[in-house]
Length: 199
Length: 125
Image 1 (cartoon, chains in turn yellow, orange):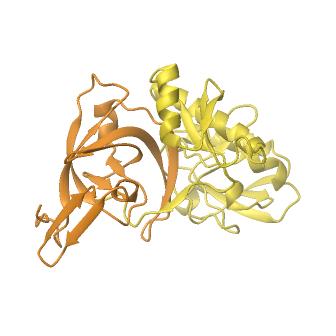
Image 2: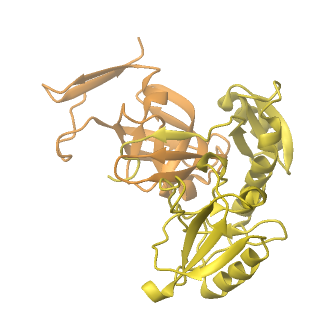
């Protein structure tokens, strides 16, 4: 397996809390495209390595801040399969783990590619991406900070302190369609759950 | 009082719950076994209910366990009913066979776990 790995050495560092995680798998073809895309980011290098790759993150939101910061390493196995998504602004690296920053809790979760899943999941993913794009700009806005917002067709359609009331209202207003409901808060929602999966 | 389910080792407080899609009443509700889990922050449903209930993802949440690292799960708004109680809740879908009734629901009720006699009760005081 060792000779099937490729390491991306990124000139930069960041905190895990700033990462917007998405997980996709890479086909060999997609991996090659990914490597080409990554090369466009100033300061990134691609070198061989043997490190196991198990975790994922979205590169683009942090890429500008990576430049000229301390080095960290991300590894991508050449044989991991399936999904990856590119566009002009974003590169999604899947199943990658940084060695020198605290990303060890990140784990592949298998959310399907929005380009390949059912239409409702593609729509959900678009709303999710819209939420991630606008979330940071709302953190200091007292109207939204600490509240749940509902994203539909790329924009906020409603907000509330109570996610249940918000859900009832937006589904009643817009029909039962893909709507993303997320909380405007600095920290990601991570809960302690001893064994969510199992029996 | 309901008995603990002795098919679990050790025996566990299990009850039958009905999970339904309140936004698509024409979709038939699904009955499942549920484990009462006061250690669970949030109620969780098996992933196979997503298709059966035709529920749409509405959010996501990350969990951190002592075994696995961090995992991200999609969340859904559903009705969870048992005994005479019904709760509209945001739940996460996970890879498991039964439902986990978490503190988001349990904290609305009075839960009596009589482990000594292997029975339990859930009341709305």
